[in-house]
Length: 614
Image: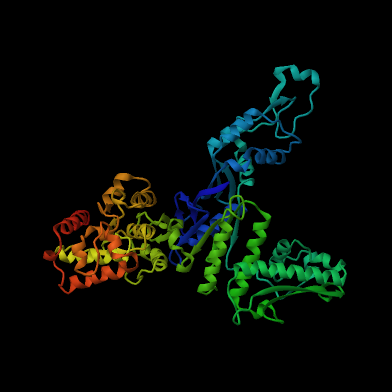
């Protein structure tokens, strides 16, 4: 089962986010935006939804009275979820039944539930939970009949065998009335993915903890939660260590410390003091007394052989990552279906450590680790936690003076203000564009696949005497063009894209390129894509827009071939195109030097550009 979308209303700076769809491409969704835009508020709202209570400070900042606060989550049921069996098992618990009939009607109706939405609402301090009407009615109409004397939300009393043949006494096993919507909503919510919230205040691993605090469950003890997480990961109980013989306890500790350190090193790639690895260790100290005079456990982080330093003596970044790692690994081990909320996980981490965090996120989201993989939603304004190959994960969080906090897909343009530019800044950083005045992109842009396309088209613009105020922006293949297109749309900039590799003359990837842009940017709309994307007709590569005689102007030694890409050679594509550009700039190559077919080929391209970039 997956969380596919959510909606937050009247929470802090949020008036109404609208329906926010999570990333369709994988299990990771990134909330990117400026400081104070409302990223944390969105995560806190989802946390409150899961905990079943709204934070007292969560009322909107600028409204009078008590507005109705709500968070809605929509889930998708997948075939592999065994949803009917899981739900019926929970029905027995929630409706206090000792058994349930395998009702064909119940199974048939529950199998119809492909999506359901649970909404949790706070109205003047009154909290309620509701499920969408369609799902509620399906459940309500599917309760199995059985012989009974009475009908209630408790098990029906046994009925003599003789009465089971009398159809008139068949009644529902239990009654679900309209007033039971909340009960049914809680039932469905209880089998949905568990939402776990992590922020900068996760419990840090302590230097030591007393066994008495663990026995008495003193949750306020320093590092209590981190130690409990460590126990879950190691599948051990520190309380039971007192009963073990010293030798047995020591061997177990060595094995567990080794396993723990190896697992941690898989996710923390930093090396301190050269090539030394980070090792995590606990050491049990047995004492005869009680309380603070009794047994305790010391914790150490070793980065230099035989030099044991307490967590307090290590950098905050390392200990914060370790403590967050303990929490995530413990939850991941305990639950199959998780939605992890991470609030600015880049804090306290330098660039390389942020890369480790990104790898950990991708690892947890990978389906190889579990049947589905964990879903992860994280808020950041660090470009190092944004991958240029996964810009479809991005949701821009913008705080506008009038609209408050809104959330948009990167390719939408609902609001055109300075806030949008601030929200896009980390994305621009991630793909290597100037973020000061965003100078690489202009108001009008021709997006091309590579550097050689940039040089050839920029040069031919001069040769043909075209004066349009647009620039050729090189990407690195079609995927980068997709990212550039999304940014142009986000910034409200005008653009067209030019791609080559026409399959009619031996190219292999044009249709794939075109379809990627169509599906990635235009949601499958063919006509809109054709309005914006030009295919170099008859060219398996931009070099095929030229003749051999044209290319000899750059290098007289080139040999004749029907494929100009092969004439130039893949290894010197960029160098060759730059030489052409320089010869045009120095007026060594003019329109009179080029063949008429070459001139006509490029005229068609520039006619399209001039028409579309008016």
